[in-house]
Structures are given as structure tokens and as C-alpha cells.
Length: 438
Image (cartoon, rainbow, N blue to C red; front, side, top):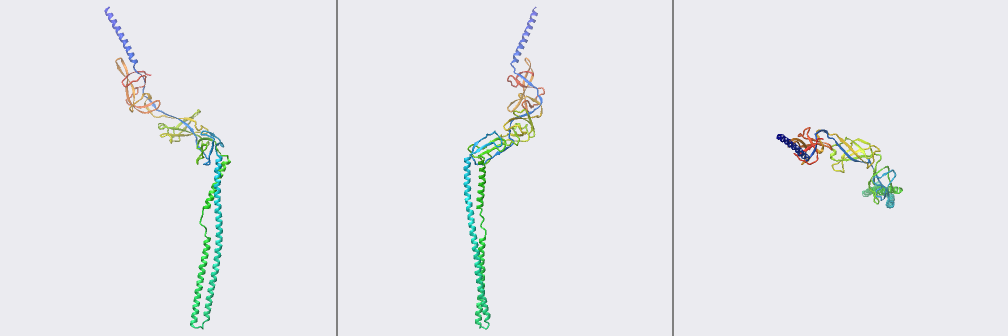
């Protein structure tokens, strides 16, 4: 009986110990972090670029008006759609008339100057004609007088020669006297001819000097050109006045830029800019440097505009650095006719399949500390209470990633390594955990 009681007591003791062990193990296990794991998988790491964009005009046209005019009323705003002939803004007619009066006064002043120049030219021409007539008369008078003097000298020479020839019987002294007189007559004739030639030449030169053309003077041409320009300009102002100061749209479109304001003056450049409806709209998106890695020239993307269920598949044929966003890029897509309107939003989407990697895990499994990446791996060992699971830290290198997967270079990982992706409590390397295999 004693042995039976001892045996029964031992059994009860061992049962109690087993129950205590189970309770202790349960309490111990309940305090452990619960973790979920995954094994490394072979995956293509795809990259999807999804960017919001906006529809912009395909082309613009300038709205011009006569510069310097004062704007009275502005009839449109940026974003307004207008039809051909719609009034965009009006000109202050009172101010316009003042400008026209000033230009008329300027034209009248120049006209007076032109009239004075023309009249002075006519008077100068009359004086020149009178001077020419007098010079020609002086030339003729001089020629007649000098021809008379030469004729008289020739007559004296002939008489002296006749007297010498008729005095053949005279003494030597008489003959010598006649010879001297003949010589004097010859000299007188030569002097008369020389004086005639010089006087006629001088009179002829005076005529030539008068006939010389006047110096070139562009004053009249300059004034006439200036007056013609003012008259042409006045005609343009008159057209504005005839239109009652209304500046209208030359075609259908949407106002994109306004460079005038009420009370201000019309600039030398465009007063407004509006879309050119003859050119289809474009879809514009901006991407950053990271997105640029996966989107490039010639890639096919899909575009979907707000309010439309239709997707447009197009290729990128325009990609350039952004002038407004440092380090950014701008992409423009031509849209079909009658698709979209300036200001409409939309989305551009492009998926790059990427490379295939042997070791891929969810991003939640990868940690970073002091520029080092690592994962936690669940390992198995024997403990006091039997088999237990603990955490081991493995350094890895991230090769590529997207929202769903990270490709790792991790020689220390095995194909069936259990990598922690979730824990309900904090843990560190070496901690024992409760592994829940999903």
C-alpha cells in the first residue's frame, strides 16, 4: 500500500510539474513579440510613374493694338472664351482725340516748313535764271567790244603796212619811223586779241558758274517723309476712332494672358495673348529626377483626362529640362483635335518592368541605420522550455525597389530564410519571438 501511495504521489507531482511547465511556458510565450515572416522571392521590380498634368494651349496668338493709347474698359479676363468679333477692351476716345489733335498740329507745322522751303527754292531758281541771263548778256557784250578793239588794232596795222610800202623812195630815217609804227601796230593788234580772249573766257566762266547745280539738300525730303509718316499714323488713329475705340478678337479662342489694365496705356508689344484654336491642345506634365530614371524619350505612356473614361496611349516625343522647376523636367504631348481644353487636369501613367532579381522582400522587412541596410531573420534553437525562435540581424544591400518590393544583395540569406515583415512589439537582435507562419 505504501508503494502504491508513493507511486500515486509521484505521478501527481509529475503531473503538477507538467501543468506548471505548460502554464509557465504559456505565460512566457504570451509575453514574446509576435512576428510574421516571408521568404525571399524572385521578382521583377516594376516602376510605375503616375504624374498629374494639365492641358495647355497648343499655340498662342497675340492681340495687338495701337501702342500708347489709353485703355478705358477691360471686357475680358484670363480664361474667358471669346468668339471672332467680341470686344476685348475699349480705348478712351477723349484721350484718342487729344492725341490726334496733337498729330494734326505737328502735320500743320511741318507743312508750313515744307511750304517755306518750296517757296524759297522757287525764289532761288528765279534769281538764278536772272543771273544767268545777265551773265550771258555780259558775255555777248564783252565779246562784241573786244572784237571791235581787235578790229581797230588790225586796221591800224594795215594802215601802217600800207604807209611803209608807199614810202619806198623815202630816206632811211623816214622808213625806220614807218617800220617802228608798223611794229607798234602789230604789238597793239596782238595785245587786243589777247585781251579779247581773256575777257571772253572770264565772261564764259561766269556763265558756267551760274549753271553749276546747287549743293544737295535733303531738308525738303526729310520734312516730306516725316509729314507722310504722320499722316499715315493719323490714318491708323482714325481707324480706331471709326471703330469707336473697340479692340476685338480676330478669331475664336481663350484668353491666356492680359498685359493691359483699365486706365493704363497699350504697350508696344502684345496687349493680350489668346489660344490659337487652329492648333490642337497639348498635355503638360512635370517630373523630378527620380521619375526621370523610369520615363524617357520614346517611351509609351497612357493619358487620361478628368471627366473622360478614354485613355490615350502616346509616345514621349518632347522632353526637356524645366525652366521653372530646378532639377525638374517638362513633358508635352500633342492631343487630338477637339480633345481637352486649357486648364483641364489629367494623369499620365507609365510602367517600367525593370530587372528580375532572385532576392526580393517587402519594403517593411528592410531597416536602415547609420547608412546600413539590414533585415531580421527568424532562427530556431533549443531553449530551457524546448524549441524557441530568436532574431538574427543580416546586413543587406538594396539593389532596386518600388512600392511593393525591394531587391536585395544578401549572400548571407538562404532561399528559405524567414524574414520578419511585422511584429506586434519592439524587439532587437537576439530576442526570442513567437513566430506565426502565415
